[in-house]
Image (cartoon, rainbow, N blue to C red; front, side, top):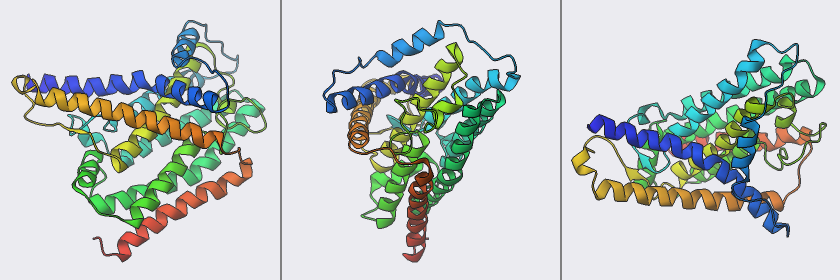
Length: 327
């Protein structure tokens, strides 16, 4: 029964990230619309868009291979697993041992790799342009992410997210290296999600777009899965920032949560953790909308400078930890 209770909590987290991802995207769009003096669409419009796409027929090019058909499912599965591994409202869940930063980075890299292949599979010019730009961005985003992982691992002596959150909750003091890692993570998150100033998800300008160029040939349920995967990735990075740098409110979970003990203390802690998580997501959505409204999109060839800054910040954070004798 204890095992069933822990599996239930883990399943709740998996369903929670899947249910909240479209709502997070709708909140960002709503806040951006309000900031630009527009009414904007409903918060639940992303759900309606996904439902409409799921009911449409998937149209495929004649020269599309099996890879083009399989990529939406692979991208969605990899992104959902990565998002579900990040502790949202509780730590120490039954699958928390798999919630490793390196594993999450690898899952995101695999999803990006397959999506770039799908963009080139049909042979259209826009798909090739989008894939080449995506590879250019990932060649700098992934090393920056690895440097961030090294910085956090040197502080917590682990790359496991529940352990890192526990160390942060216990208190590590004011560290310049962690501030640099946070800034680097935010820069990588903006680039990975194709947000302004790296890309503009609200437009379809063929000469400037990156992510949208790779998925122009998709439609129906395939496009719905890719859109949902993109929404899950945005939620993943906000959850990662909340778990590592703002871990307050996370409920401790693990062995000992038998059904008889599931009455008030665990359920109350889980409820508090969910409320805290919802507040963190809302604050992150508002800050992202304010940032995107107040800045313009940069040229594509300026993106390496943008991500180069994230790489250098992550590297400086790691070097500072070595110099300060953290080991």
